[in-house]
Length: 186
Image (cartoon, rainbow, N blue to C red):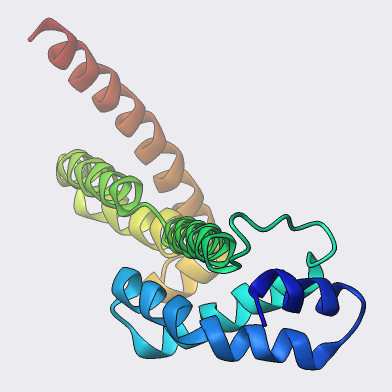
């Protein structure tokens, strides 16, 4: 029986006729796909998709020279290209997700470098303060203690902590302005 006759019968719903077409051309479709993919399992899966497509579109298909093979191979090529596009899209999507999930380390590194520079600059300014004012700045501003807690830690009256804090702020402000002026000039 010719492919055209088997195809006509399968269009009429005769599944045995379509099975005969499968038996006749599955190996050729499979080998075509294997040569394109170099994977036995992929070729097997794609062959199944080709014949599924053939079954779904059997009423629309017009056979050339009474042979189903040219149409099946063209369909195999389309199925394969579609699969490659899907895989490419999946890889791109995965890559985008990975890139979105990975924070940009450059910003963190730059921030840490800036923080280190600022800490060194502040440390240099603090070294210019008298020790008793430097202790207040370190406890209250860097360690987050309130004035009362700093007074307890240093075993000095609260008023002394407040006056030293006020003098330290003024000196730091004056030193910072002086350093900024020197930096601007250089």
